[in-house]
Structure formats: C-alpha cells, structure tokens
Amino acid sequence: MDAVKDNKQSFEATQGASGEYAEVQADLCPTCKKPVEDECAGTSERRWHLACLKCANCEKGELGRNLSDAVYMIQDKRVLCGTCAAHSEGDHEQFKSITRLKQFIFLLRVALARLLGMLRAGGTIPHTSGKYPASKHAISFANEMY
Image (cartoon, rainbow, N blue to C red; front, top):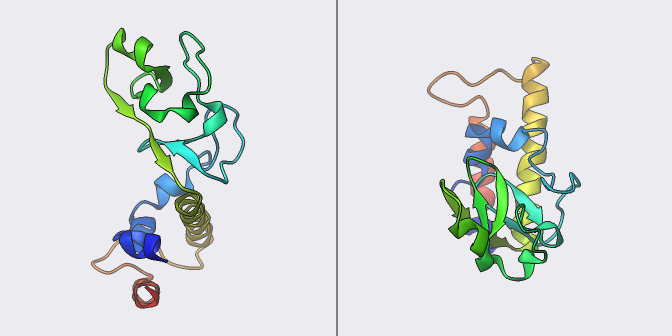
C-alpha cells in the first residue's frame, strides 16, 4: 500500500491520462508484443520484459540484467546498449527498474482507463469537460481509501 500512497497522482492520473493508459499496446512489450505482467524495465513511454532488452544495433543481449547499460533512443524508438548509444545522435532516456508491485498498479490503471473509455464511448458516463470531472465522487472515494 505504501507504493500506492507514494504515488500522488494515482487515480487522478488515470482520469487525466486515460488516453495514455488506454493505448492499445500500453501493457505490451514492444519487442515481443506480449503482456508485461511482472518485474520489468521501463521508460516514460513503454515497458519491456527484462529478457527482451537487447541492442537494436549490435544485438547485445541481456541488457535487462544491467539497466545502466541500456538506453532508449526517443526519436528512433529503439533500445541501444551504452556503446552504440554513444555513437548515436538524438535524445535518449535511461531505463528504470520497475518492481512487480508497481507493474501491477500500472496494469490496474490500464484496465481502469480502458473501462472508462468504453463507458464514455457507450454514453454510460459523460465525458469530462467542465471544472469538475464526471467521476468527482469516485476520486474522493479512491483518495479516502489511501
């Protein structure tokens, strides 16, 4: 529960970024296209199975064992090892280790965002367009739980 309490944006982030979480491939590893349901490596955009991290240039494998040697090239959307990244231009991002609990929380947000999208598309709940979100009471309830 502490991991959930530490995340200040918990339910509000899901409300405001439901498009990001509801993205069709948000919960899929970009390499193998299978769901990521355990400890993994991630950037601000995506999450990978640790075993799937390998350099797109030299094909150096097992970068998941040493995330400090793995780099995500933002424009190219490619994973590179530190050596290949040093010879590449463009913005990059370091991978971070994501615990199993944090991944479960992420997957719950994905499921919630997809559910909200379906309910809004079906007209069950209105789209939020005013000062207060349509699920103001749900947000209050979720905050009280933590």
